Image (cartoon, rainbow over all chains, first blue to last red; front, side, top):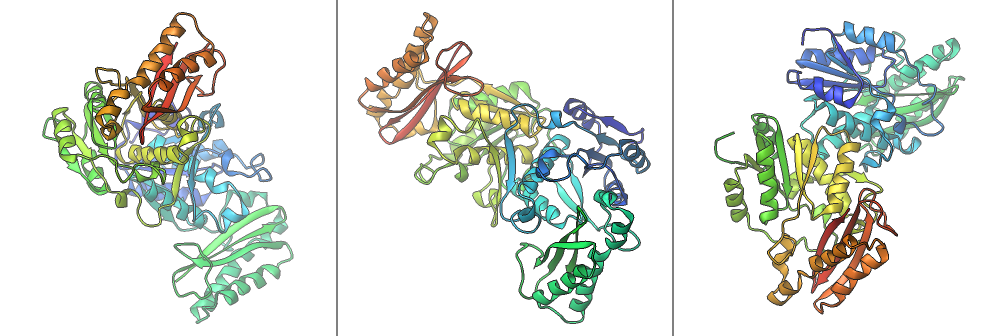
Length: 281
Length: 281
């Protein structure tokens, strides 16, 4: 499409405009408050597809009761400007009432891959993610869908779901975009005060220290985790929630890094929970 | 399409040929061993759609461990002749290994509507049904999908799933096809010996007796169920598993039929389990 971006809300509007998109169509699912990470996904979709659909939906089903649904940052006007500049074709912004009408009762569950890491810390989170992504896939029928490597487990879970549920969709996982000091871009970074923001690069610094040790021959997973733990503990603003060194494919914890591994962690900086990860291979 | 019917097995073949189908495309999911009930679905799809896809897959996930998966009747050659005659465009016949590869771990669950009736008698059955139908929907991306009224709860569950998961698919439920003596057509009728076959119309006879009473003013659900129960108990070959008189929409049992109701039952004739239903409105 070469015309200007079309913004739709209801499913009926989406189904109508979807029919006029040229194939292949790329989908970029987002929760809005877009940053360069999101835009890099839109740009990759733009390069690889004839049509680009972006969804903006803060999905209540993937937030726990104690989590930040109510405070999740929003800036719709800016999001739409960024998407127009990135040449999206359709922006779909459903409401919660459209996505979860009265008497809603259907769930998509991925069993094993959702158990460790984020799944163990955020019960119900991935059930909300797989259910809403399945809905986004069904409603938009894309040929490709784009996700960020920052949410590595999410990407693995979506890949598994896509294969298991026979979707004719290619899952494309794009590199984590980082601020110049290494902090992984995230909408949640906006929660940080200046002092916390200054402390936040410790996640990536810790991951990089472990990766350097790995590249220098350290493949004991306990010691690699300890390197990250020490870095986090050295930052008074930071509190480690978990550090994992797991098989990249199964997400099961390793004793020794003799296959491709995912080194990942969750850290609280004040009340803000940040995650990051790096591959060891 | 006007060319002859295309038969595919793998997902890759299906995805390839699917692209050449004209819209709207209709899907008729079956477990094979086709009878006039299935063919009536194909014919309705043929009338309403430009393309007709039929799937044949005996889905192991919807059979309980004590059920008849191993003995489920098959006659592929005859099925394909019938589908060719009914002018299907694509017949998709995946294997279990294609549908559930190693490390399969994803499920689609509809919560409330799957609890009563068949769901209470066949634990896990509807989870298998909704998961496989979701896979069939994803792989074939139809505009309409056709189901038989004989499996009334299944049709209600699929409708709910389709709405909840935002599928742009119209669910078409077609009338139960019956033998001349009233027996609802079912692949499982082939299990009946001649004596059992003669006894089997008692399900429909019981339902009709209750419907007649309803039309003559009886709206007490207890008494309507009793009419059916008496009919079944009057047939020595038959053993009633359940009789339900429920709200047509919610499938919750009624005390009084003051909304559209579904009168449904399951009966064992020997070791063969038959179901049937009728609407009261």
